[in-house]
Length: 335
Ligand SMILES: [Zn+2]
Image (tube, rainbow, N blue to C red; front, side, top):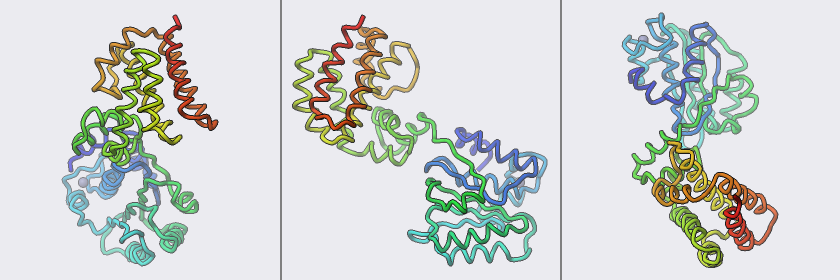
């Protein structure tokens, strides 16, 4: 992969790349790093980018040349100085770690720095983690460890304290939407689920979930019912809404979706080109945006936030939603 492609892929991780390049330029290469960030943020790609940089035969630049013998061998997975460890089944086992350490401490058949990358480092079992810890406590020679994890808190604190933490930003919402659409999710559903979570995998599961699709539809129906008449909205709460949103967590999610709909209205009023949560309802929400003033909109959003707060006081949830509908109508009376 050319650096140009990496940089296009990793557009969201410029800060990380800059930090690693700077440590190389300043000859302050760490003994151990933890790259932490959600799945799909390019941790392994950037770990290999860094390995290439550290081993590249053309040392004048702060990016790997990609064409020297060394760079090409890292790319093809054949560089003897670069080792990647992955879970063997559920865990990374002590035996794997022992083999790795033996490999790292073996004296020089290949010159230069050795780099080992531990993928899904949170899956090290306790014996493996302790073996690694012992090795990290006695750093020797030109060896650099890169631990990759999407669960920083699951790494032993004693290991954390011996590593430089490099945090990866979650992918941009636009990038996530594109990824989800590549996997067959509709543009409108992708736009909604990426409001709910910044984790691509979680977003994909949500997008495939029939219950969530039902929730989404019901929230939009509530918007429509509230736009017509308060009685219709109250009836809707008692019949359809209560059937879909039973538990507290579900209601909380419903209220979040409602907030996203009001956010779409706000974006429409401000003529912002931001990515909508409900692009499929653009016409309807734009119509509401024309009717509602800013102060009405803010009163309505405050009403939803208040309902969210009340949700935690064990109030009857149907009652809470009926009260919300009344408050939303009242919001319309604000001048
Ligand atoms: Zn090179």
